[in-house]
Image (tube, rainbow, N blue to C red; front, side):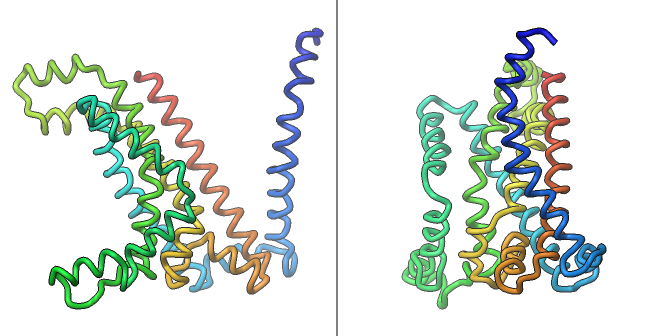
Length: 275
């Protein structure tokens, strides 16, 4: 090995060592707990697929994540489309609306939605004051509240990959479709959307992975009535002290996230080849 490669190895060595110490070793410890606590074996993994309580939490989490992903990507696509193809003034407004949420704490945003959605909150009070409803709507302390709060938080994360995909669309292709007599909606469904599908899939994976591990927003807005998997793991660790089950669920979640990460990497490679 030449001296230059030795210098590069010395300079780069701290990063992989840090990753091993901060991520690999703790994960190996968690994996060990999943097959040793409370007794050696795969009993905790079997419980995940047989215990009705655990299955209910996993199904609820999957349902909420799918809904949040679909709504977030749909709204983000509309925002990204106007950001890329809209007039300059609209583009600047959308930039502010997309960037400002990143500067606000997720905790503050969750409590903000709680104030808006609760029974005596701004939304219900406004609707009752104009006579549209006679009693408060159940907008919070349920799955709906979690979906609203999570969607609001995750939309900006979907906007950026979608905007990147839209910027790669050649305007000459759109002009050619228009010149051949296609209307705006036909151009969108037949040209723009198919050409940006890698970005749509990438945004969906990013949002789904974030939603899968959400904790603060669902815990506050559902009021403990719609427990998702991250909160369930917390309860197993610090209330029921069932570390083995929490560790087994964590290992399965990490495997799912790793598989989705590999899919996202493959999608990004395909997008680069197409671009």
